[in-house]
View (tube, one colour):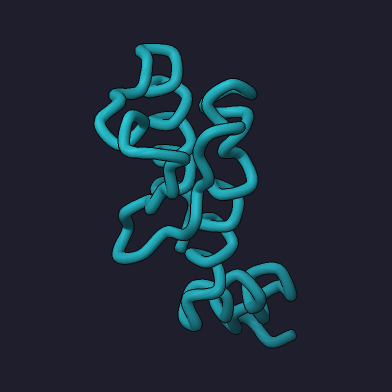
Length: 93
């Protein structure tokens, strides 16, 4: 290679840029959040709720009945969900 020439990007860099540009990386992160729902909220809550999708960066959750509609997540659930979203948000998109 001649002096001063840039080295070509690695395959990982090319793939990472492709995933970011096409939005696939964000979809992967959203799917990770959905897949982690039971771990995040615990078995008891997961039996009565279902993470449906992430749309416009909002997690949509289906609940078993109206009693669950107004329920606030526990401190532990909120903490774990926050970590999931923060980890997802800070991953290169």
